[in-house]
Figure 1: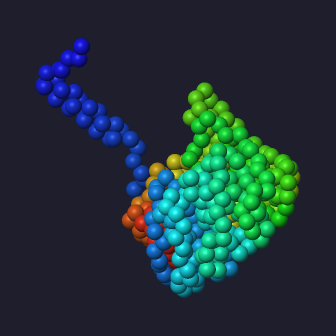
Figure 2: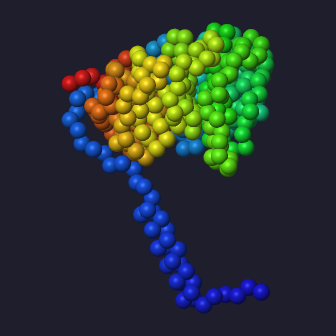
Length: 384
């Protein structure tokens, strides 16, 4: 039998829940407040264009790509666009399908985007005309990587596919181990000559033969530990950085490592936890760690250089390097520039009130930013 409590008890219970919620909110650690500092650089917006917004769930997988003086960008609503990187002039615009969740990839003469239904689309890089589409078994949450003959893509279920760039026909597939619980995202495979390099959901970096799909080497950079599935999370979700014959990768609840590209042997490591891939400039490696600490490491030995905790819990995206500075953007839409030598702030600019989560592109003194509101902008950074 169901008994309806008196109204005064309902009111008391409602007040208790309200007070508990307020107390919980007050007790929760808040994002760091922005500190003031002298601006040492000029951050000038050169151009801005609209590309369309994306669902928050897929923001980190929808990043632009810059090739041969053209920047390609896509939105979750299915629009793919190409722009002259110097002037911002739109070169073409194509409508694919709603629900895009992975891209933009580039290879040879094509660009690639994927959707939440597991479809991968190939468009002509010169005019945006669709070349082919193929259905895979699971969501495409990161960019594909290709050359003139092949295209590699990883799906949410841990499968790595090699497809024909001409037709989308499957050439081979490789299955990685997918734990019961993972972070929502996948690492983009890198197609480098005869190698496919990819980060996996169980904390490994794997190299495959691009021709056959056979495994050449693997290196576990994060070891699952703990009693619960949450404690065992160990994904390699961020982009793997390449600097000559050295690979740099980060993992969640694991390490940041430098690996030999040919053998996979570990050259150096540092305990670390990050959802994002690292940025590399010269002998320095930059990482945004869990909790939004920006950290710099030296060379392949991964020796700590500095750490900046003044952006704690501000929802930072992956780091980029522009004009020799470290660039990160936050959930409130602020762009922050840090000195690469010691980590102090040198510049800040409000980009867009809707926030920035998509990885940025640094190219010399220019920085390309795709914001939550659907804008793509180019900024020039120069010392004062």
